[in-house]
Image (cartoon, rainbow, N blue to C red; front, side, top):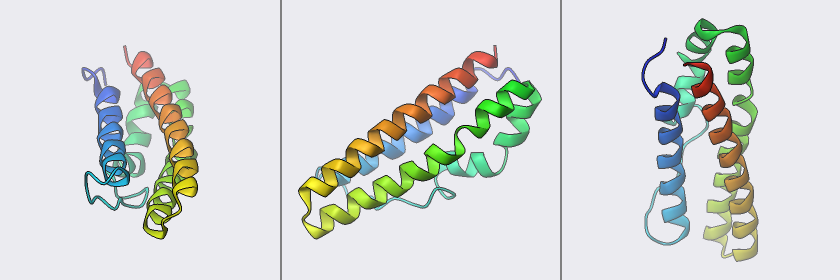
Length: 119
């Protein structure tokens, strides 16, 4: 594949999504999120990602597969944070945000690892 910064662009898609959720939680936006299949990263995970990672190596495909669960959990945590915000549950929102950021970090680290495999 060796497309310049390919996995970094997937990471940017995720970071942009995270920023929109964060803005809404901080009363600076109104983005309500999507399910884990409908965001840009999710679309790639469901469509081209398996083929593109497999084209690099078996190890890259195994690393790619590590994205699936934390990505779904990230969306569940962001949905929970938004629901807590609407309900006025600040503590619940902050707990969900903490989980959301931990999962985001996991996703970024895996995408960085994939980027390193594609060189």
